[in-house]
View 1 (cartoon, protein in one colour):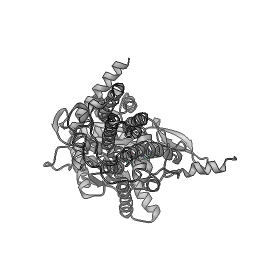
View 2 (cartoon, rainbow, N blue to C red):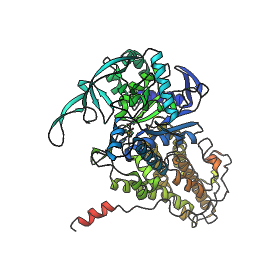
View 3 (tube, rainbow, N blue to C red):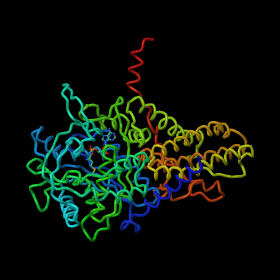
View 4 (spheres, rainbow, N blue to C red):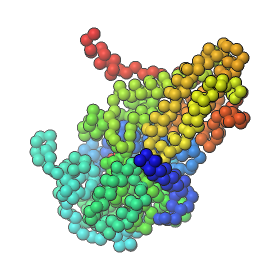
Length: 568
Ligand code: MSP
């Protein structure tokens, strides 16, 4: 029943929109404040790769989209620097953990700057402000009776820094054929551990977590179902410290320095650190919108809301969960040496080309494979041919010798063209709302698909109307050609405005070429005003300076190599 589905979707859009505009001052009560967007914080035991960039990019595009809609938001990112993994990686390199952290954290910053992640805060878990937040949070959990001392016995996965029950592990073979035990979820090796440490009363929070799930906080829906499934069973209490003689690189338990705080409790609190917790004078912690990959769902969908609820704070408003990038069908990972270097991709495709590909071909719901041929094909077709072609055509001197925005006059639209024009304008005017809905529902790929579809339809319309012939015709035909040109320029202004979050440089090139002033680069103004009989600010205004080709067609080296190898 499509209308039931549509009504349910609309309800969800409205609910998400309310969350986007409001941040809760307490669980349930609303107060207007900016939305807080966060990326995961990144482990510093390996250099940044394409998968990391994707997590950050999804949050960035949401942050930039909020800005063009006139909504205020913040975006935090950073590096996760404690724990046994980092301790071991530093030892293997013969450097100190702190040296390794500083070096790799800086690499993340550089890559994020290069790809244009517009973060408003970059947090490192080794910073004093974070250590203070973690220790204050720990004391709050202790004061509220959620921490006790106990003996933890079970499996520990160092790669994932996760405690696992027997049924979350399975037997496997390592590369030499030796039988080992691995995590069912990640496939990483686990080791048996028996240690006296501090435990968190996770078991007591299951009912509250189930209540929280009723608010539909996890997108897309398949991930919500997975969490429901996990919560079908009782939750065991969680070990939240390690003895510091085993894990020394971390934050000590405030009342007992012989224990180090569990690295995931430490890391998740970064979301509070950037909200200036525990400063009582800062804006109250409102539920954030966290962007994360599916491999860290359990930590964000069970542990994090449980920690917050135990501390008397509101749980996250939204978790936006994405799937993974694979390389020839295998998840990218440092250990498999199949990672794609984002810096190399920025050189090959420009930062906007790379951003566009990741956002358009990535999908939160399913894993996507990265290959250079697919990148070239998409960028040539969408950016060089469709969008770049349209810009070239409607700003060409042959068609627009005055290099001005022409006027639109209703009366010169030929009666045979009116219905088709009405349909075209209707679709163009619905586009901003459609794009906004996709963005709110965490579907950037669909938003870009909708814009690209519209660009292609308009190209086809332009081709069918052949304004280059009309400008050589009688007065009416000339005037009609000006109307077509006006609509095309106005549509390009709309596309470029909508594309700013995804491809900020290309969008700027288009808006500069169209001579659009800075204050007109948001979605808060109106489009196609003249077609409703209003006065359009741009009519008669000069275009901006020439910009050359919008996006240079790529030569796909891999494709060319394959062609050369093939016998003729
Ligand atoms: N440090 C933790 C997160 C703590 S957040 C409080 C961590 N770090 S990570 O560096 O391993 O991963 C960071 C993000 O990169 C995660 O969202 C993860 O899903 C994402 N990706 C890592 N590899 C990926 C792919 N191959 N594809 C897409 N994203 C993946 O986990």
